[in-house]
Length: 131
Image (cartoon, rainbow, N blue to C red; front, side, top):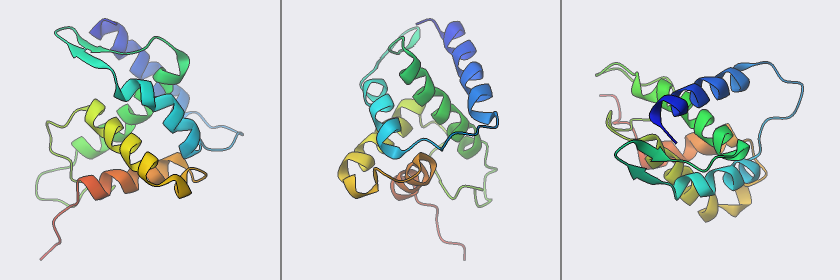
């Protein structure tokens, strides 16, 4: 998939994820099933070769939103989501952390995706304790 079309897909999913919904939040189990194939995607000179399906787009878009918040934290300030991922961390790395954590914690698969995703990222990228 070309980078330009990936950007369009990301913005499309950000819009979908930000829209009010009467349905339940995504479970970790559901999002894990969406993200497994994405975490196995290869990076090429043109970008990430994502699977071209709805589920992969949901995963990619959800982590685009998370990445936008954690990467934009100001240096020296405690990030809003308490995740201190390196500025050069990639979305694929964040997704791989979530997939690994979810598979290692099957007791949490029924929980809300966002809670588990943030816990996985906080464990992988802890913030230094304030002095």
